[in-house]
Amino acid sequence: MEKRIVNEIRRLVAESPDNRFPNSDKHYFDTPLVGYSQAADPIFTEFKTHIGSFHLTPQEIFASTFGVDKGQAASVICWILPITEDTRKSNREKSFFPSWEWAQTRSNGAKFNVSLSLHLVCYLEQLGYRAVVPLLSPAMQVFKNAQVGVASTWSERHAAYAAGLGTFSLNCGFITERGIAVRCGSIITNLVLAPTIRFNMNPWGNCLHYGRGGCDICIQRCPAGAISSKGLDKMECYKHVYGDAPRTVGTIYGVKETGCGLCQTNVPCEYRVPATFSP
Ligand code: B12
Image (tube, rainbow, N blue to C red; front, side):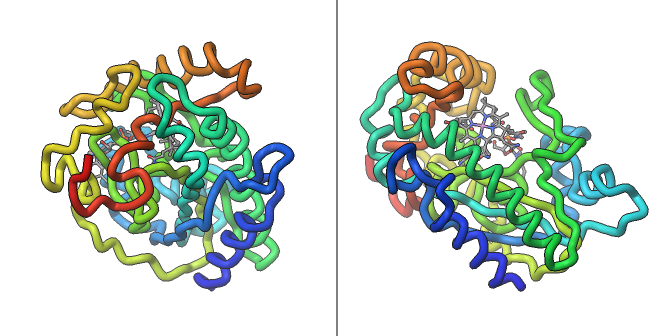
C-alpha cells in the first residue's frame, strides 16, 4: 500500500493540468518525495512543547473531523513538492521581490497542492478508509501572536520532519534531499502504513549554519532583513511576504499571493542537502 500511495501522488504531479503554468506545459513541481509517520508517534505530542499547546496531534484532528467514536488515526502521509529548476533560476536573479514564476508557483502551485490533498482523500475513501486534510479540517487555525510568532494548529514542516523527510534550518525553512525550495503537504488517515525511518535525529542537521557554521547566505538574501544568526523574525518576513511583495508586484504578475522565497534560492541548500560550504 505504501508503494501504491507514492505512485498515485507521483502520477498526479506528473499528469495533473493543475500542476502547469498558465497556457504552458511547464510544471510548478517536480517528482515529489513521500514519507509516512505513525499518528501515535510521541513526537506529535512533543511538538506541543516546541510550538504551543494549540498545535494538534493527528488523533486530535481526526477526532475533531469525524467524531471521537469513529476510530483512531493511524498514519500521516506527507509529501514534498520540489519547485522546478526554471522557477528556482528565475528567483535566484531577484534581489528584492520574487520572480513571476515564483509568484505563480506560490499562488497557483499552492492550489494544486490542495487539489492533490483532496484527490488523496478521495482515493483512500474509495479504498474504504477515512482521511482528512489537516489544513482544511474544522480544527485549522492560524495564530498571529503565538509565543513562537505566526503559527498554525498543524505545521506541515513538523509533520514532514516526523516522516523523516528533512530537517529545519536557520531561516526556519525545511531542507529536504531536494533542497529547501519546496512546498509541503499532508493528510491524516486510519489506514495503517509502515513509517519512514527518521535517519537525521538532529532537527537542524541539514542546515550548514548549524552543521559546519559560517553559512549565512540566507541572511544576506533576505530582502526584509528578517534573518539573523538568531533565526527568523517572522513578523518582518510576514510584512514582506504578505505586504510589500504582493502590493508591489501582485497586480503586475496577476496573482494575489506572490510569496518571496529569496531565502530559498541562490543558497547552498536550494535544491539539495548541502555537503560543503560553497558561496
Ligand atoms: C505561518 C506561516 C508562515 C509565516 C511564519 C513562518 C514560520 N516559520 O512559522 C510567514 C508569513 C513568515 C511565512 C513565510 C514563508 N513561508 Co510559510 N507558512 C506558514 C504556515 C501557514 C504555518 C507555519 C507554522 O505554523 N509553523 C509552526 C512554527 C512554530 O514552526 P517554526 O517556527 O518554523 O518551527 C521552529 C521550531 O519548532 C523549532 N524547534 C525548536 N525545537 C525543536 C525541536 C524539534 C524536535 C523540532 C522538530 C523542531 C524544533 O524548529 C523550527 C525552526 O526553527 C505554513 C503551512 C503550514 N500549516 O505548515 C507555511 C509554510 C511553512 N511556508 C512555506 C513557505 C514556502 C514560505 C515562504 C518561502 C514564502 C513563499 N511561499 O514564498 C516564506 C519563508 C519563511 C521561512 N524562512 O520560513 C512552506 C515551507 C517551505 C519550506 N521549505 O520550509 C509552508 C510549509 C507552506 C507549504 N504548504 O509548503 N510562512
